[in-house]
Length: 268
Image 1: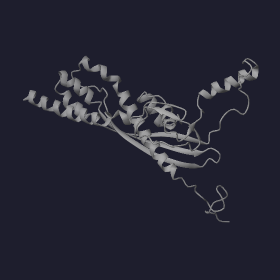
Image 2: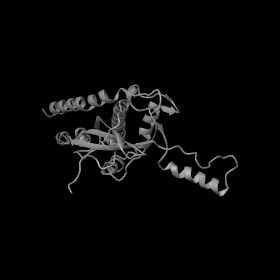
Image 3: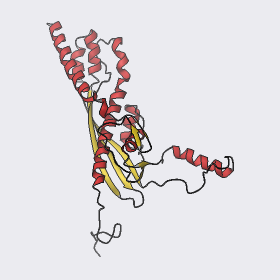
Image 4: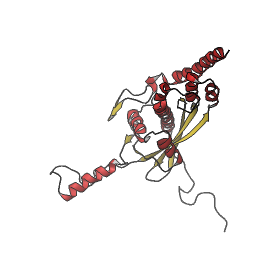
């Protein structure tokens, strides 16, 4: 009886774990990927929005003080979201990306070397060379997750290899990553666009189950790749939504002009 039940549980686990993950992530042609050089891109996701000409220059700035970033970098062990977003932007040709991150230190260092006379003549790092950022894009993430550890508890009772599978299932979580991209006009400070994106994934991690088996331990670091794919897909979704919205952009108008008192007056 125990053997029959164990077989049934294994079949259920295989169906509930492998099928959803494969169905969602097997279509690699739509994953953020490839490269970009100037206005040209190679191997971009087929569903990425594309513009005939850029709408302006943009910098991507990530607020790394938020709880979402601490969870991203500490718990998920994933790097900054900026490179992925910058690749999406350049591949789409909807904006020209300008540097406002850590590489700015190197840009300023070259200018300091020029001012000190250390660079060769003709290096041309003089004043008035840098391009202004018309807009700033700010990414953020909202993580939601539910723990399906109950499956691990059931399998852990069988011990042996089933217990080891229980260890894996004990860490099984169904996560939904909701991303936000906010777009700010740098000259006025006005928010001109915001878009949400989302993607779901199945996260395989190792929990602690009964009767562990060392053969399953190698899966411990596997969680990084699914999380990365989920977030990249969610940001691609948000970026597509933002581009579609910005194509129909109409400035908000306030009677009397923006920032000049508004219509909601206070009493005397």
